[in-house]
Image (cartoon, rainbow, N blue to C red; front, side, top):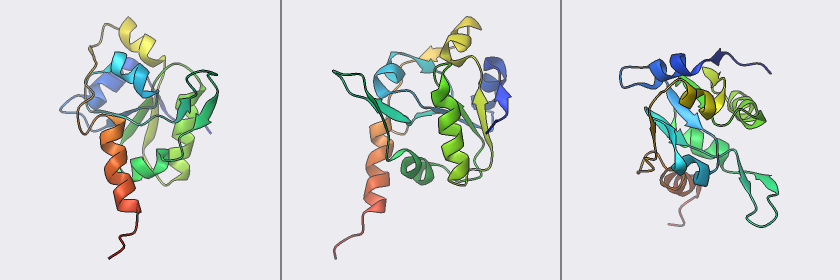
Amino acid sequence: MAHPALDPLQTAERIASGGDATYVDVRPVADFVKGHPKGRVINVPVEFYHPRTGFAHANESFVLVLQHTLANDTPVVVGGDADGRTERAADLMVEAGFTDVSVMSAGLIGWRTCGLAVTGNNADGVSYVSLLTPAKRAATPSSS
């Protein structure tokens, strides 16, 4: 399924403090902390890689975390590397009911080529683990 594509400059405008969108970086945590677009950004990896074999496996909590973190009508720009993960993640989001999903063309390489700001910020509310924990807690029925 094709999604509207934004170039890095359009994305930067949409995720800036006065913008309307949240950038969902779907790269693995290790890549995210090395540098990602500066702005309204969260890290929710669409897949993980086995450390020894490099074998990819889907992040079974991808949709859960997004649905707990963002309203379905939140404007979202999905990004990462210029590879198939971004489109796959956007497809999953649309299938889960997100209604305003775009993708950033050219990936982080394109972002850097445009000279846009990069950060390693992985604080609460941005980092995957800080988003995963409350989503898992909310999804687990209490035993009271």
